[in-house]
Length: 84
Image (cartoon, rainbow, N blue to C red; front, side, top):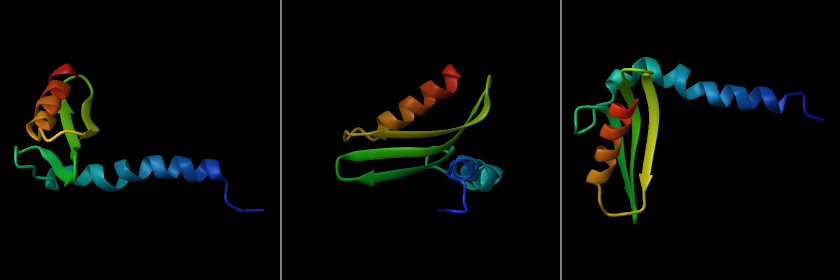
């Protein structure tokens, strides 16, 4: 029998990105000047980071597309930012 409560671990994992990375979000410098990083694998384009919104403050996001339209990631990010 494990001495670790799995529910406790799940809660900790959810909190880790915010606690560890959000205070340093300003260190991320995407090519668009935003707080994001791009990623590319065969057939997949990604964009992940933080977006500052007027209604919700700073939010985390991940965009992953199975297309070769890399610019679509940034169009979606602009839509997220203006919609929130």
